[in-house]
Structure formats: C-alpha cells, structure tokens
Length: 280
View 1 (spheres, one colour):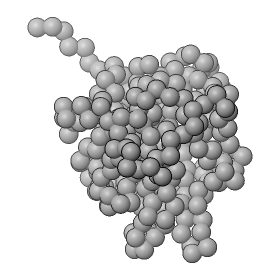
View 2 (view 1 turned 45 degrees about the horizontal axis):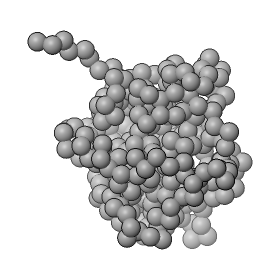
View 3 (view 1 turned 90 degrees about the vertical axis):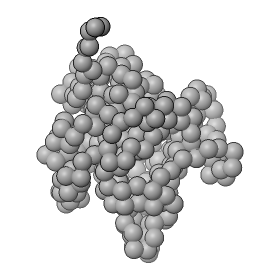
View 4 (view 1 turned 120 degrees about the vertical axis):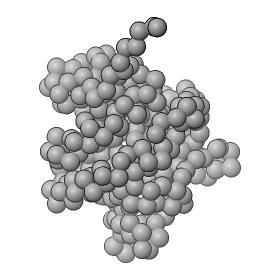
C-alpha cells in the first residue's frame, strides 16, 4: 500500500494517511485485545477526561507484552516495515503501544503538541502510527500541522499532568524552551491536515510533527484508537531533565541501556530490517 506519493508527503508534511494499510483481519483482533485491556488496565492507565455528562477519554500504554493480540500485531502486521520505509531507515524498532478510547459524544480534544520531546529517546527518525478501530469523520480525526517536524525549535510542550492531575504525567519545560505556537487560536496561519478514516487506514507521522484534536464526537459516535510508536536509525536513549511521558528511564536502565545507546532489547525489538540488494 506504500507509494512514492506517501513517501513524498511524509517527507514534506511530516505525516501521511495510508488507506487500507492494515489488513481487515487485524481489526477484530485488536478490538479483542482492547477489550482485555479495558477489563485489566495496566498501572499506566489514566483518564484524560471524565465529564459530568458521562463522556470520557481513557488512555493506557505499553501493554503489548501482556496482550497477545497486540504482540501479534507488532510482529506480524507489517506496520514495522511500513514505518521503517517511510522514515527511510535501515531498521524499525518497536517502541511502545498506546490506546485512546473516547466514549460517544466526547468533546475533549487533545492539545496540540509534539511526541518526541516527551519520550525517553531522541532522534528525527521516530514516528507514530495512529490507527482508528472505528470509522472517524474528518471533524473528529487527529490533526497535523504540515511541515512542523522541520521547524527545528525546542518548544515548551503541554504538561499533561495539568489535565490528568496525576503526578506520573508531570513534565515541566523551563524558560529555555520556545513558547508553543497557538495553533488553535491562529489556525488560519497553518496548513492543518486531517482525514476521514476507516478501520485499517493509518496516519503515520514524524514524532516531531505538531498534532492534536481527535475530539468533537457526535452523540452516537465513539472512537477507539490503537497507536504504535517506532524508532529508526538515529534514535538514541535520552533521559530528559524536564521529565518524560511515558517515562521509560527505569525500564531502560534495568535493561542495561544508557543515554546515547541504540534502543534495542527484548522490550524494544527490532521488527524489520531492510534487506541488502547488491548492484546488478
């Protein structure tokens, strides 16, 4: 499903939407995994939003080693190869999984942010694959600021701890960081991309691409999203003084990884390697 147009859009805009990137058979498999996860969430789960009207936004992550359906997808769906080829990398290392479950009618929108500044790694060759398990309209889909992955600013990101009131989410960017642009308040200044999507479609974006939204659901529409995060050739372990979310520093240290190392271990498997093709 990956075309030269996808590669060009990913390189220039920092995001591309691949229709039918995932075979339809994976959707019920992931839905079963999500059902198991909802029944037995990890200690990393939290509610980003719980409103008086009953609407909510649930988040959980790093469950692939406990949920067979997720592990099967990571290793056998081909998503690693797609991510690796889009990044132009020789390898694709699986970083972590995350799920977002919004109940029908939820209006909570994720604030605009970048992913990589929160992570326990650093590198341009990093990406996220955003895959809805339900049909989603363009108005309710994730939004991306085209080209923002190349802006080369150290933006002060949103402190999600202020949303969740959870100490585990506290990430505090000091005055040395550039103030984050007001994307929502000045939308006309930016090229903002989003797509109506069906299960099996995947939006893959550079982890430095500014993105947010995925709210404003209709009263009869819920939305579950399964995310996978991938690392390419230049990604290295980085423990950030401002904090990390999710914070992998302890499990990385326990695995013998230290700042500057390539991110490879049983917890971060190399799922795909580009085959060498000799000149003819």
